[in-house]
Length: 351
Image: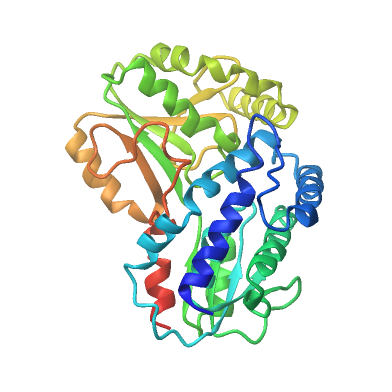
């Protein structure tokens, strides 16, 4: 199977996903094998949401929209052309996927298969319904993928390298179990924003998307902000007010109430607006419904500190920090936005 065949197959998968938008699901008769997959996929989406109630329909189809835009022949060709994939000897890559947001392991899935390797997948129980059906669709549009993709719910064996994503605790286990193999092992990272007080209302509204998308469960979700002394938090609260209905989602509301009670009993100072709590805290990882904040005096000193803490940070939103992500764009990663800054395709191309 050539790289061109693989790219065409994934582009067809992108066309398939375009049918499932945030406005409506609309069947396109021009999509190959749609009679076999369209209704079955709708059913799998229902199963995925029933199995993990954090996976709202809005968040799931948001993920589909992002991937449908990236899975086109031009983008995939441009991405892969940066690597030498001409003489790949197919090896089996064990990929242990997280389950914090829908299809969070799809980039690894795409990278392994486009590079010409085989993939052995261990899914999280929180996200196990969508990818298997997408795999079946791939195998229909490109039958040579059969035998390249396998799922495993038990102990992983018979693989040549691994890519594992989990928490700081599971990362230690991964290092112990997979350390003797070529590997990429990822642990907890968080995203943050550095504000100057000069941001426009529109930029702060977009920051709301970075904070609230996926209920803040993604590693690219902003969990902390750095602000100058005397920062006016009212302007932030006013800008993100459009997200107020998030508190009507029961699991989010439960986390809000629980964390608020814990903070109040501990006599922590809180700033809150009924759907988001701001707490001054030096940590990067904040609980659901909480945004940590920290003051800074000199932004150049802060920038040096962030460089030292780079292994804890996934991405930074700011107008004032070099190589930052634009407001509202953290949940729109490109094909070259590699988790933890480790180029997966370089790793795969050199095995």
